[in-house]
Length: 309
Image (cartoon, rainbow, N blue to C red; front, side, top):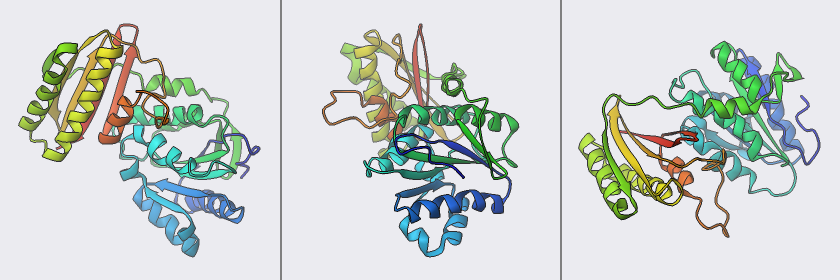
């Protein structure tokens, strides 16, 4: 497996596997080769796969950063800053290896566009860095459309042990897939706000979510997320906006709409630099939410996040 094309290049292969044996054949040598070269290695995959890998690696697993992706990456928007970049930034010199599996069979239709967008944005976030991110895909359990998207978001595909350049590589497609218009809720409580009524928007959101049954600690997180998004609307979205809340299937949903346009596809995916003023709003929302979806166009921007009851 040729996953290292020079010390200064980012490498992002998709690994298609169809059973446990193929999974281990594609991942274990990748880990062991990195350890043999004294390269830092992290593995962030769903819990069942994590247990499989840990058992096969044996004592070598102690030298690997192991994370359950169903927890650390439940929100796809949190994976780049909180999992991949958080690990890679600890090692500014030399190559870093990461296995990241953000898509599994039980991912919902609502979550999937954010997953595809995440895979596409990895290519922007790590461009020019000495990092390899190997992304396994369950070719037996995932739909053909998912595998087609993997070919579009990964410049290299490994299938049956054979590594080839992806002729379908077009990461802009994945970014666009995550920017789809969001379906409107059947009913929602809503409030318009502007600079003078920012505190009212936060109070309104907390009051409605409390009425839905959201507990106190996540209420604090919701208040923080709403404060960040509504402030962004006032500063960058035309000076006003609308906040809406509803609940469905055991989750509270909140969205903020304004007339601004979100120009940076990596907004909310990169940690704020110490010298940077502002720019943390979407990062905070990703950190405290189970899922974040965004749609931006010339007519305005909608940011939607959800929290479990």
